Length: 624
Image 1: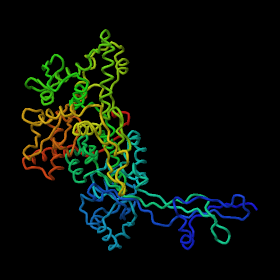
Image 2 (image 1 turned 120 degrees about the vertical axis):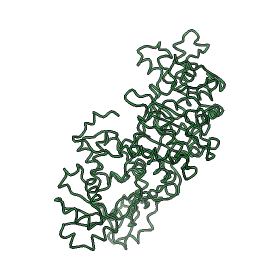
Image 3 (image 1 turned 90 degrees about the vertical axis):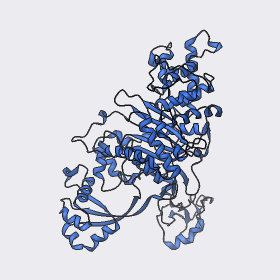
Image 4 (image 1 turned 30 degrees about the horizontal axis):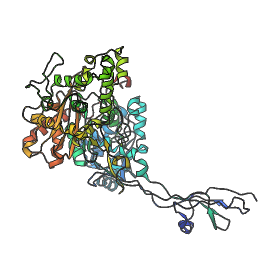
Protein backbone atom coordinates (compact mmCIF):
# COMPACT_ATOMS: atom_id res chain seq x y z
CA UNK A 1 0.00 0.00 0.00
CA UNK A 2 1.31 3.46 -0.87
CA UNK A 3 2.42 5.52 2.19
CA UNK A 4 0.65 8.90 2.52
CA UNK A 5 2.38 11.91 4.16
CA UNK A 6 0.62 15.07 5.30
CA UNK A 7 1.71 17.95 7.55
CA UNK A 8 -0.81 19.17 10.11
CA UNK A 9 -0.68 22.35 12.16
CA UNK A 10 -1.99 22.63 15.71
CA UNK A 11 -3.85 19.66 17.18
CA UNK A 12 -6.56 19.67 19.79
CA UNK A 13 -5.44 20.14 23.38
CA UNK A 14 -6.24 16.51 24.34
CA UNK A 15 -3.92 15.20 21.65
CA UNK A 16 -1.11 17.53 22.80
CA UNK A 17 -1.45 16.25 26.37
CA UNK A 18 -1.36 12.66 25.17
CA UNK A 19 1.90 13.24 23.26
CA UNK A 20 3.67 15.60 25.67
CA UNK A 21 5.91 12.80 26.89
CA UNK A 22 7.46 12.64 23.43
CA UNK A 23 8.90 16.19 23.52
CA UNK A 24 12.42 15.26 24.61
CA UNK A 25 15.20 17.09 22.74
CA UNK A 26 17.37 13.93 22.67
CA UNK A 27 14.61 11.55 21.53
CA UNK A 28 15.70 9.00 18.90
CA UNK A 29 13.96 9.52 15.57
CA UNK A 30 12.29 6.48 14.02
CA UNK A 31 10.07 6.06 10.98
CA UNK A 32 8.22 2.73 10.91
CA UNK A 33 6.71 3.57 7.51
CA UNK A 34 9.95 2.48 5.91
CA UNK A 35 9.26 -0.99 4.54
CA UNK A 36 5.78 -1.23 6.16
CA UNK A 37 2.29 -1.38 4.69
CA UNK A 38 0.09 0.67 7.10
CA UNK A 39 -0.83 4.27 6.25
CA UNK A 40 0.60 6.80 8.71
CA UNK A 41 0.17 10.52 8.97
CA UNK A 42 3.07 12.85 9.67
CA UNK A 43 2.02 15.38 12.26
CA UNK A 44 3.80 18.48 13.51
CA UNK A 45 2.57 19.66 16.90
CA UNK A 46 3.40 23.07 18.29
CA UNK A 47 3.95 23.00 22.04
CA UNK A 48 1.33 25.52 23.05
CA UNK A 49 3.20 27.56 25.64
CA UNK A 50 3.02 31.31 25.18
CA UNK A 51 6.27 32.63 23.72
CA UNK A 52 7.39 35.91 25.30
CA UNK A 53 10.32 38.04 24.20
CA UNK A 54 12.92 38.53 26.93
CA UNK A 55 13.55 41.83 28.69
CA UNK A 56 16.69 43.96 28.59
CA UNK A 57 17.98 45.02 32.01
CA UNK A 58 20.97 47.05 33.16
CA UNK A 59 23.76 45.72 35.41
CA UNK A 60 21.66 46.44 38.51
CA UNK A 61 18.56 44.68 37.10
CA UNK A 62 16.60 47.81 36.24
CA UNK A 63 14.31 47.00 33.30
CA UNK A 64 15.23 49.12 30.26
CA UNK A 65 13.23 47.42 27.50
CA UNK A 66 10.17 45.19 27.84
CA UNK A 67 7.17 44.07 25.82
CA UNK A 68 4.15 45.81 27.30
CA UNK A 69 0.70 47.05 26.26
CA UNK A 70 0.84 50.37 24.43
CA UNK A 71 -2.12 52.70 23.93
CA UNK A 72 -2.40 54.39 20.53
CA UNK A 73 -4.79 57.14 19.52
CA UNK A 74 -5.39 57.21 15.77
CA UNK A 75 -6.26 60.65 14.41
CA UNK A 76 -8.26 61.32 11.24
CA UNK A 77 -6.29 62.29 8.14
CA UNK A 78 -7.89 65.74 8.07
CA UNK A 79 -6.89 66.99 11.44
CA UNK A 80 -9.40 67.85 14.07
CA UNK A 81 -9.60 70.78 16.43
CA UNK A 82 -6.19 70.71 18.18
CA UNK A 83 -7.54 72.76 21.08
CA UNK A 84 -10.22 70.14 21.70
CA UNK A 85 -7.58 67.40 21.41
CA UNK A 86 -5.49 69.09 24.06
CA UNK A 87 -8.45 69.42 26.39
CA UNK A 88 -9.33 65.77 25.88
CA UNK A 89 -5.81 64.53 26.71
CA UNK A 90 -4.88 67.14 29.30
CA UNK A 91 -2.12 68.62 27.10
CA UNK A 92 -1.32 72.31 26.72
CA UNK A 93 -1.09 73.89 23.27
CA UNK A 94 2.72 73.64 23.16
CA UNK A 95 2.61 69.92 23.91
CA UNK A 96 -0.04 69.31 21.25
CA UNK A 97 1.97 71.14 18.59
CA UNK A 98 5.21 69.36 19.53
CA UNK A 99 3.64 65.91 19.58
CA UNK A 100 2.05 66.46 16.16
CA UNK A 101 5.30 67.86 14.73
CA UNK A 102 7.22 64.84 16.01
CA UNK A 103 4.66 62.52 14.43
CA UNK A 104 4.57 64.09 10.97
CA UNK A 105 7.50 63.08 8.72
CA UNK A 106 7.79 66.54 7.09
CA UNK A 107 6.21 68.84 9.65
CA UNK A 108 2.99 70.69 8.87
CA UNK A 109 3.54 70.03 5.16
CA UNK A 110 2.50 66.44 5.88
CA UNK A 111 -1.15 67.25 6.52
CA UNK A 112 -3.17 64.19 5.66
CA UNK A 113 -0.47 61.78 6.89
CA UNK A 114 -2.00 59.17 9.24
CA UNK A 115 -0.98 59.77 12.85
CA UNK A 116 -1.04 57.51 15.88
CA UNK A 117 -0.12 59.11 19.18
CA UNK A 118 1.21 57.08 22.11
CA UNK A 119 -0.78 57.63 25.27
CA UNK A 120 -0.23 56.80 28.89
CA UNK A 121 -2.75 54.64 30.72
CA UNK A 122 -4.23 57.74 32.35
CA UNK A 123 -4.56 59.55 29.02
CA UNK A 124 -6.18 56.48 27.48
CA UNK A 125 -8.68 56.40 30.34
CA UNK A 126 -9.58 60.06 29.67
CA UNK A 127 -10.31 59.15 26.06
CA UNK A 128 -12.50 56.21 27.08
CA UNK A 129 -14.50 58.34 29.50
CA UNK A 130 -15.19 61.04 26.92
CA UNK A 131 -16.75 58.88 24.22
CA UNK A 132 -18.75 61.77 22.74
CA UNK A 133 -15.59 63.74 21.99
CA UNK A 134 -13.88 60.78 20.35
CA UNK A 135 -16.98 60.01 18.28
CA UNK A 136 -17.29 63.62 17.19
CA UNK A 137 -13.64 63.90 16.15
CA UNK A 138 -13.43 60.36 14.75
CA UNK A 139 -10.67 59.28 17.10
CA UNK A 140 -9.86 55.57 17.46
CA UNK A 141 -8.18 54.23 20.60
CA UNK A 142 -6.36 50.91 20.23
CA UNK A 143 -4.05 48.81 22.36
CA UNK A 144 -1.21 46.57 21.25
CA UNK A 145 1.86 44.93 22.70
CA UNK A 146 5.16 46.46 21.64
CA UNK A 147 8.71 46.91 22.87
CA UNK A 148 8.62 49.74 25.39
CA UNK A 149 11.69 51.72 26.52
CA UNK A 150 11.65 52.77 30.15
CA UNK A 151 14.54 55.19 29.54
CA UNK A 152 15.37 57.68 26.81
CA UNK A 153 19.12 56.98 27.20
CA UNK A 154 21.16 54.26 25.55
CA UNK A 155 19.76 54.32 22.01
CA UNK A 156 23.10 53.20 20.55
CA UNK A 157 23.23 50.28 23.01
CA UNK A 158 19.61 49.11 23.14
CA UNK A 159 18.89 49.39 19.44
CA UNK A 160 15.52 48.20 18.18
CA UNK A 161 13.54 45.20 17.00
CA UNK A 162 13.73 45.04 13.21
CA UNK A 163 10.06 44.15 12.76
CA UNK A 164 9.11 47.31 14.65
CA UNK A 165 11.50 49.55 12.67
CA UNK A 166 9.97 49.05 9.23
CA UNK A 167 8.63 52.61 9.13
CA UNK A 168 12.17 53.87 9.78
CA UNK A 169 13.56 51.70 6.97
CA UNK A 170 10.92 53.02 4.57
CA UNK A 171 11.66 56.62 5.51
CA UNK A 172 15.39 56.05 5.00
CA UNK A 173 14.76 54.72 1.50
CA UNK A 174 12.34 57.49 0.59
CA UNK A 175 14.73 60.21 1.71
CA UNK A 176 17.48 58.47 -0.27
CA UNK A 177 19.80 58.44 2.68
CA UNK A 178 21.14 55.01 1.86
CA UNK A 179 24.29 55.53 3.89
CA UNK A 180 22.29 55.87 7.09
CA UNK A 181 20.17 52.89 6.16
CA UNK A 182 23.31 50.76 5.85
CA UNK A 183 24.78 52.10 9.07
CA UNK A 184 21.65 51.51 11.10
CA UNK A 185 22.45 50.16 14.55
CA UNK A 186 20.12 47.45 15.83
CA UNK A 187 22.00 47.30 19.16
CA UNK A 188 21.58 44.35 21.51
CA UNK A 189 17.97 43.91 20.34
CA UNK A 190 19.34 42.80 16.97
CA UNK A 191 22.61 41.17 18.07
CA UNK A 192 20.91 38.94 20.65
CA UNK A 193 17.61 38.63 18.78
CA UNK A 194 17.57 34.82 18.73
CA UNK A 195 18.13 34.57 22.49
CA UNK A 196 15.60 37.29 23.29
CA UNK A 197 12.98 35.70 21.04
CA UNK A 198 13.36 32.08 22.10
CA UNK A 199 11.78 29.37 19.92
CA UNK A 200 8.75 27.13 19.79
CA UNK A 201 8.85 23.47 20.70
CA UNK A 202 7.66 20.94 18.13
CA UNK A 203 6.61 17.25 18.32
CA UNK A 204 6.80 15.06 15.20
CA UNK A 205 4.72 11.89 15.76
CA UNK A 206 3.67 9.36 13.17
CA UNK A 207 -0.02 8.54 13.78
CA UNK A 208 -2.23 5.84 12.30
CA UNK A 209 -5.92 6.18 11.42
CA UNK A 210 -6.97 5.29 14.97
CA UNK A 211 -4.78 8.06 16.47
CA UNK A 212 -2.12 5.71 17.81
CA UNK A 213 1.47 6.87 17.67
CA UNK A 214 4.10 4.82 15.85
CA UNK A 215 7.44 6.51 16.48
CA UNK A 216 8.48 9.88 15.15
CA UNK A 217 9.40 11.15 11.71
CA UNK A 218 11.76 13.92 12.88
CA UNK A 219 13.57 14.92 16.03
CA UNK A 220 11.42 16.79 18.58
CA UNK A 221 12.55 20.26 19.63
CA UNK A 222 12.25 21.69 23.11
CA UNK A 223 10.30 24.88 23.74
CA UNK A 224 12.61 27.71 24.80
CA UNK A 225 11.19 30.87 26.30
CA UNK A 226 12.80 34.18 25.31
CA UNK A 227 15.62 34.93 27.73
CA UNK A 228 16.30 38.14 29.61
CA UNK A 229 19.48 39.99 28.67
CA UNK A 230 21.38 41.62 31.53
CA UNK A 231 23.57 44.44 30.25
CA UNK A 232 26.92 45.55 31.60
CA UNK A 233 25.63 49.12 31.31
CA UNK A 234 24.98 51.24 34.40
CA UNK A 235 21.76 52.99 33.33
CA UNK A 236 22.30 55.99 35.64
CA UNK A 237 25.90 56.44 34.49
CA UNK A 238 24.77 56.11 30.86
CA UNK A 239 22.15 58.84 31.29
CA UNK A 240 24.68 61.09 33.05
CA UNK A 241 27.30 60.63 30.33
CA UNK A 242 24.71 61.40 27.65
CA UNK A 243 23.89 64.68 29.40
CA UNK A 244 27.56 65.63 29.26
CA UNK A 245 27.87 64.98 25.52
CA UNK A 246 24.31 65.82 24.42
CA UNK A 247 24.20 67.37 20.97
CA UNK A 248 27.96 67.53 20.42
CA UNK A 249 29.65 65.15 18.00
CA UNK A 250 31.78 62.50 19.62
CA UNK A 251 31.76 59.49 21.89
CA UNK A 252 32.44 58.29 25.41
CA UNK A 253 33.16 54.68 26.34
CA UNK A 254 33.66 53.62 29.97
CA UNK A 255 34.45 50.05 30.96
CA UNK A 256 35.54 47.93 33.88
CA UNK A 257 39.14 46.99 32.97
CA UNK A 258 39.09 43.83 35.11
CA UNK A 259 36.18 42.28 33.17
CA UNK A 260 35.82 44.17 29.87
CA UNK A 261 32.25 45.08 30.84
CA UNK A 262 31.14 48.35 29.22
CA UNK A 263 29.67 50.66 31.86
CA UNK A 264 28.65 53.52 29.56
CA UNK A 265 28.57 53.73 25.78
CA UNK A 266 27.65 57.11 24.31
CA UNK A 267 27.47 58.00 20.64
CA UNK A 268 26.71 61.70 20.24
CA UNK A 269 24.63 63.54 19.16
CA UNK A 270 22.28 61.47 21.29
CA UNK A 271 18.61 60.84 20.54
CA UNK A 272 15.72 59.12 22.38
CA UNK A 273 15.95 55.33 22.48
CA UNK A 274 12.39 54.90 21.16
CA UNK A 275 12.76 57.32 18.24
CA UNK A 276 13.28 54.69 15.52
CA UNK A 277 10.33 52.45 16.41
CA UNK A 278 7.69 54.64 18.05
CA UNK A 279 4.67 55.15 15.74
CA UNK A 280 4.47 58.89 16.53
CA UNK A 281 8.14 59.76 15.85
CA UNK A 282 8.18 60.00 12.05
CA UNK A 283 9.14 63.68 12.20
CA UNK A 284 12.01 62.94 14.59
CA UNK A 285 13.25 60.17 12.30
CA UNK A 286 13.25 62.53 9.34
CA UNK A 287 15.43 64.97 11.25
CA UNK A 288 17.79 62.20 12.35
CA UNK A 289 18.17 60.99 8.76
CA UNK A 290 18.80 64.49 7.39
CA UNK A 291 21.08 65.75 10.17
CA UNK A 292 24.56 66.49 8.80
CA UNK A 293 26.05 65.51 12.19
CA UNK A 294 24.95 61.91 11.52
CA UNK A 295 23.48 61.00 14.93
CA UNK A 296 22.61 57.53 13.60
CA UNK A 297 26.28 56.71 13.06
CA UNK A 298 27.43 54.39 15.84
CA UNK A 299 30.57 56.39 16.54
CA UNK A 300 32.38 54.29 19.18
CA UNK A 301 32.28 51.20 16.96
CA UNK A 302 32.24 52.60 13.42
CA UNK A 303 34.17 55.90 13.46
CA UNK A 304 37.93 55.32 13.23
CA UNK A 305 40.03 58.48 13.56
CA UNK A 306 43.64 59.41 14.36
CA UNK A 307 43.89 59.16 18.18
CA UNK A 308 46.37 62.00 18.67
CA UNK A 309 48.68 62.14 21.66
CA UNK A 310 46.86 59.43 23.62
CA UNK A 311 48.66 57.02 21.27
CA UNK A 312 51.99 58.06 22.80
CA UNK A 313 51.21 55.48 25.51
CA UNK A 314 51.27 52.66 22.97
CA UNK A 315 54.40 53.93 21.23
CA UNK A 316 56.20 54.30 24.55
CA UNK A 317 55.26 50.75 25.61
CA UNK A 318 56.50 49.32 22.28
CA UNK A 319 59.73 51.35 22.44
CA UNK A 320 60.41 50.10 25.98
CA UNK A 321 59.76 46.49 24.95
CA UNK A 322 62.05 46.73 21.92
CA UNK A 323 64.81 48.43 23.88
CA UNK A 324 64.68 51.69 21.94
CA UNK A 325 64.38 53.69 25.20
CA UNK A 326 64.51 53.23 28.97
CA UNK A 327 62.20 54.86 31.54
CA UNK A 328 65.05 57.25 32.36
CA UNK A 329 65.64 58.27 28.73
CA UNK A 330 65.42 62.04 28.17
CA UNK A 331 65.20 64.07 24.98
CA UNK A 332 65.46 67.77 24.24
CA UNK A 333 62.28 69.63 23.22
CA UNK A 334 63.65 70.33 19.75
CA UNK A 335 60.88 72.13 17.91
CA UNK A 336 62.82 72.02 14.66
CA UNK A 337 61.67 68.39 14.52
CA UNK A 338 57.99 68.93 15.30
CA UNK A 339 56.03 71.71 16.98
CA UNK A 340 55.27 71.39 20.69
CA UNK A 341 52.19 73.30 21.86
CA UNK A 342 53.05 73.05 25.57
CA UNK A 343 55.58 75.27 27.35
CA UNK A 344 57.29 73.00 29.84
CA UNK A 345 60.59 72.13 31.52
CA UNK A 346 62.99 69.72 29.86
CA UNK A 347 61.58 66.20 29.51
CA UNK A 348 64.46 64.25 31.04
CA UNK A 349 62.54 60.99 31.45
CA UNK A 350 59.56 59.10 30.06
CA UNK A 351 57.48 60.28 33.03
CA UNK A 352 58.20 63.93 32.14
CA UNK A 353 57.56 63.27 28.44
CA UNK A 354 54.08 61.93 29.23
CA UNK A 355 53.33 64.60 31.84
CA UNK A 356 54.05 67.43 29.38
CA UNK A 357 52.95 65.48 26.27
CA UNK A 358 56.11 66.74 24.55
CA UNK A 359 55.83 66.13 20.81
CA UNK A 360 59.60 66.37 20.11
CA UNK A 361 60.22 63.85 22.91
CA UNK A 362 57.99 61.23 21.29
CA UNK A 363 59.26 62.13 17.82
CA UNK A 364 62.69 61.02 19.04
CA UNK A 365 61.29 57.96 20.84
CA UNK A 366 59.84 56.67 17.57
CA UNK A 367 62.92 57.76 15.67
CA UNK A 368 65.06 55.61 17.95
CA UNK A 369 62.75 52.69 17.29
CA UNK A 370 62.46 53.00 13.49
CA UNK A 371 66.08 53.93 12.78
CA UNK A 372 67.62 51.14 14.84
CA UNK A 373 70.12 49.21 12.72
CA UNK A 374 70.32 45.47 13.42
CA UNK A 375 73.79 43.98 12.79
CA UNK A 376 72.39 41.86 9.97
CA UNK A 377 71.17 44.98 8.13
CA UNK A 378 73.98 47.37 8.95
CA UNK A 379 74.55 48.16 5.28
CA UNK A 380 70.89 48.63 4.32
CA UNK A 381 69.13 51.38 6.28
CA UNK A 382 65.95 51.17 4.15
CA UNK A 383 65.58 47.46 4.89
CA UNK A 384 66.18 48.17 8.58
CA UNK A 385 63.39 50.75 8.61
CA UNK A 386 61.04 48.28 6.94
CA UNK A 387 61.91 45.62 9.49
CA UNK A 388 61.55 47.98 12.47
CA UNK A 389 58.20 49.35 11.28
CA UNK A 390 56.87 45.81 10.78
CA UNK A 391 58.09 44.87 14.27
CA UNK A 392 56.48 48.01 15.76
CA UNK A 393 53.22 47.14 14.03
CA UNK A 394 53.32 43.55 15.35
CA UNK A 395 53.60 44.74 18.95
CA UNK A 396 51.00 47.47 18.53
CA UNK A 397 48.50 45.10 16.90
CA UNK A 398 48.62 42.96 20.04
CA UNK A 399 46.56 45.74 21.68
CA UNK A 400 43.64 44.63 19.51
CA UNK A 401 44.26 47.39 16.96
CA UNK A 402 43.93 47.12 13.17
CA UNK A 403 41.34 44.40 13.78
CA UNK A 404 37.88 44.10 15.26
CA UNK A 405 37.71 43.43 18.98
CA UNK A 406 34.67 41.19 18.53
CA UNK A 407 32.39 43.34 20.68
CA UNK A 408 28.68 42.48 20.69
CA UNK A 409 27.66 45.33 18.37
CA UNK A 410 26.20 44.85 14.92
CA UNK A 411 29.09 46.49 13.07
CA UNK A 412 32.62 47.30 14.17
CA UNK A 413 35.38 49.01 12.18
CA UNK A 414 38.90 47.54 12.45
CA UNK A 415 40.80 50.83 12.39
CA UNK A 416 44.16 50.95 10.62
CA UNK A 417 47.89 50.67 11.24
CA UNK A 418 50.19 51.28 8.25
CA UNK A 419 52.54 48.59 6.96
CA UNK A 420 55.92 49.00 5.20
CA UNK A 421 54.22 47.97 1.95
CA UNK A 422 51.60 50.67 2.46
CA UNK A 423 54.33 53.33 2.66
CA UNK A 424 56.17 51.84 -0.34
CA UNK A 425 53.03 52.40 -2.41
CA UNK A 426 51.92 55.73 -0.93
CA UNK A 427 55.44 57.26 -1.08
CA UNK A 428 56.23 55.78 -4.47
CA UNK A 429 59.57 54.41 -3.25
CA UNK A 430 61.04 51.90 -0.83
CA UNK A 431 63.63 54.46 0.22
CA UNK A 432 61.25 56.48 2.39
CA UNK A 433 62.78 57.88 5.57
CA UNK A 434 61.55 58.30 9.13
CA UNK A 435 60.92 61.98 8.44
CA UNK A 436 58.14 60.99 6.01
CA UNK A 437 56.30 58.86 8.59
CA UNK A 438 57.05 60.70 11.84
CA UNK A 439 53.37 61.56 12.37
CA UNK A 440 52.98 58.03 13.77
CA UNK A 441 54.95 59.20 16.82
CA UNK A 442 52.17 61.57 17.89
CA UNK A 443 49.18 59.44 16.88
CA UNK A 444 48.47 61.29 13.64
CA UNK A 445 48.75 60.52 9.98
CA UNK A 446 47.64 57.08 8.87
CA UNK A 447 46.79 55.62 12.29
CA UNK A 448 43.05 55.19 12.89
CA UNK A 449 41.41 53.85 16.08
CA UNK A 450 37.79 53.43 17.12
CA UNK A 451 36.38 54.51 20.46
CA UNK A 452 36.12 50.89 21.61
CA UNK A 453 39.80 50.41 20.81
CA UNK A 454 40.76 53.60 22.66
CA UNK A 455 38.87 52.53 25.81
CA UNK A 456 40.35 49.04 25.56
CA UNK A 457 43.81 50.58 25.20
CA UNK A 458 43.30 52.36 28.53
CA UNK A 459 42.12 49.08 30.09
CA UNK A 460 45.23 47.28 28.84
CA UNK A 461 47.51 49.82 30.51
CA UNK A 462 45.41 49.61 33.69
CA UNK A 463 45.79 45.80 33.67
CA UNK A 464 49.52 45.95 32.82
CA UNK A 465 49.17 44.17 29.52
CA UNK A 466 45.99 42.07 29.25
CA UNK A 467 42.28 42.54 28.57
CA UNK A 468 38.96 40.83 28.16
CA UNK A 469 37.15 41.81 24.92
CA UNK A 470 34.80 44.73 25.68
CA UNK A 471 31.16 43.66 25.74
CA UNK A 472 27.69 45.02 26.47
CA UNK A 473 26.00 41.92 27.92
CA UNK A 474 27.11 40.42 31.23
CA UNK A 475 24.54 37.62 31.33
CA UNK A 476 22.12 35.82 29.02
CA UNK A 477 19.48 34.56 31.40
CA UNK A 478 21.60 33.33 34.30
CA UNK A 479 24.42 31.87 32.20
CA UNK A 480 26.85 34.78 32.14
CA UNK A 481 28.27 36.43 28.99
CA UNK A 482 29.08 34.66 25.73
CA UNK A 483 32.11 32.37 26.18
CA UNK A 484 34.44 34.46 24.03
CA UNK A 485 34.14 37.37 26.46
CA UNK A 486 35.69 35.21 29.19
CA UNK A 487 38.91 34.59 27.27
CA UNK A 488 41.77 36.74 28.54
CA UNK A 489 43.87 38.33 25.79
CA UNK A 490 47.53 39.27 26.32
CA UNK A 491 49.66 41.84 24.54
CA UNK A 492 53.30 41.25 23.57
CA UNK A 493 54.45 43.92 26.05
CA UNK A 494 55.86 42.95 29.45
CA UNK A 495 53.95 44.16 32.50
CA UNK A 496 57.03 46.03 33.77
CA UNK A 497 56.94 48.24 30.69
CA UNK A 498 53.30 49.12 31.31
CA UNK A 499 54.13 49.89 34.93
CA UNK A 500 56.74 52.36 33.65
CA UNK A 501 53.93 54.38 32.02
CA UNK A 502 51.95 54.83 35.23
CA UNK A 503 54.00 57.62 36.92
CA UNK A 504 53.73 59.77 33.81
CA UNK A 505 49.99 59.15 33.46
CA UNK A 506 49.42 60.08 37.10
CA UNK A 507 51.59 63.21 36.62
CA UNK A 508 49.33 64.30 33.72
CA UNK A 509 46.64 65.14 36.30
CA UNK A 510 49.00 66.68 38.85
CA UNK A 511 50.49 70.14 39.10
CA UNK A 512 52.18 71.07 35.82
CA UNK A 513 50.57 68.20 33.87
CA UNK A 514 48.51 68.81 30.76
CA UNK A 515 45.27 67.97 32.62
CA UNK A 516 46.09 69.26 36.11
CA UNK A 517 42.73 71.08 36.31
CA UNK A 518 40.91 67.72 36.06
CA UNK A 519 42.46 66.18 39.18
CA UNK A 520 40.19 64.33 41.62
CA UNK A 521 42.73 64.41 44.46
CA UNK A 522 40.36 66.52 46.58
CA UNK A 523 38.07 63.47 46.94
CA UNK A 524 40.92 61.02 47.38
CA UNK A 525 40.87 59.56 43.85
CA UNK A 526 44.12 59.35 41.90
CA UNK A 527 43.46 59.39 38.15
CA UNK A 528 45.95 58.15 35.55
CA UNK A 529 45.37 59.55 32.09
CA UNK A 530 46.65 60.99 28.85
CA UNK A 531 45.31 63.94 26.89
CA UNK A 532 45.24 64.26 23.12
CA UNK A 533 44.58 67.04 20.65
CA UNK A 534 44.01 65.72 17.15
CA UNK A 535 44.98 68.07 14.34
CA UNK A 536 42.19 68.67 11.87
CA UNK A 537 42.82 70.42 8.55
CA UNK A 538 39.09 70.95 7.94
CA UNK A 539 38.16 72.83 11.10
CA UNK A 540 38.82 73.02 14.81
CA UNK A 541 40.96 70.28 16.32
CA UNK A 542 39.41 67.23 17.97
CA UNK A 543 39.77 66.63 21.71
CA UNK A 544 40.68 63.22 23.17
CA UNK A 545 41.41 61.69 26.56
CA UNK A 546 41.97 58.17 27.91
CA UNK A 547 42.47 57.23 31.53
CA UNK A 548 41.50 55.08 34.48
CA UNK A 549 40.86 55.38 38.20
CA UNK A 550 41.84 54.71 40.90
CA UNK A 551 45.34 54.55 39.45
CA UNK A 552 46.57 51.81 41.82
CA UNK A 553 43.42 49.65 41.68
CA UNK A 554 41.49 50.56 38.51
CA UNK A 555 37.71 50.18 38.60
CA UNK A 556 36.85 52.24 35.53
CA UNK A 557 38.64 53.13 32.29
CA UNK A 558 37.29 55.89 30.07
CA UNK A 559 37.91 57.14 26.53
CA UNK A 560 36.42 60.43 25.32
CA UNK A 561 36.60 61.91 21.82
CA UNK A 562 34.91 65.23 20.97
CA UNK A 563 34.98 66.41 17.38
CA UNK A 564 36.05 70.04 16.77
CA UNK A 565 36.20 70.68 20.52
CA UNK A 566 39.79 71.92 20.73
CA UNK A 567 42.24 70.78 23.39
CA UNK A 568 41.87 67.39 25.01
CA UNK A 569 42.87 68.85 28.37
CA UNK A 570 40.08 71.42 28.45
CA UNK A 571 37.27 69.60 26.59
CA UNK A 572 37.65 65.80 26.83
CA UNK A 573 39.44 65.33 30.18
CA UNK A 574 36.74 67.07 32.30
CA UNK A 575 34.02 64.85 30.78
CA UNK A 576 36.04 61.72 31.51
CA UNK A 577 36.85 62.54 35.14
CA UNK A 578 33.25 63.55 35.88
CA UNK A 579 32.10 60.14 34.67
CA UNK A 580 34.81 58.50 36.80
CA UNK A 581 33.75 60.45 39.88
CA UNK A 582 30.07 59.75 39.28
CA UNK A 583 30.74 56.02 39.03
CA UNK A 584 33.17 55.74 41.94
CA UNK A 585 31.44 58.11 44.37
CA UNK A 586 27.87 58.32 43.13
CA UNK A 587 27.93 62.12 43.16
CA UNK A 588 29.99 65.11 42.03
CA UNK A 589 31.92 67.20 44.56
CA UNK A 590 30.62 70.79 44.97
CA UNK A 591 33.80 72.33 43.55
CA UNK A 592 33.18 70.57 40.22
CA UNK A 593 29.48 71.43 39.97
CA UNK A 594 30.47 74.48 37.98
CA UNK A 595 32.30 72.27 35.47
CA UNK A 596 29.28 70.03 35.26
CA UNK A 597 26.90 72.92 34.55
CA UNK A 598 29.24 74.42 31.96
CA UNK A 599 29.72 71.13 30.11
CA UNK A 600 26.00 70.32 30.16
CA UNK A 601 25.11 73.80 28.94
CA UNK A 602 27.44 73.36 25.98
CA UNK A 603 25.86 70.02 25.24
CA UNK A 604 22.38 71.58 25.37
CA UNK A 605 23.34 74.52 23.17
CA UNK A 606 24.35 72.06 20.47
CA UNK A 607 20.90 70.87 19.32
CA UNK A 608 20.42 67.15 19.74
CA UNK A 609 18.19 67.03 16.66
CA UNK A 610 18.43 69.85 14.16
CA UNK A 611 15.60 71.07 11.95
CA UNK A 612 15.69 69.38 8.53
CA UNK A 613 16.82 71.44 5.52
CA UNK A 614 14.23 72.64 3.05
CA UNK A 615 15.48 70.14 0.49
CA UNK A 616 16.87 66.68 1.31
CA UNK A 617 20.66 66.68 1.31
CA UNK A 618 22.34 64.24 -1.06
CA UNK A 619 23.95 61.33 0.75
CA UNK A 620 27.08 61.79 -1.37
CA UNK A 621 27.52 65.38 -0.22
CA UNK A 622 28.18 64.49 3.43
CA UNK A 623 31.69 63.29 4.24
CA UNK A 624 32.07 60.37 6.62
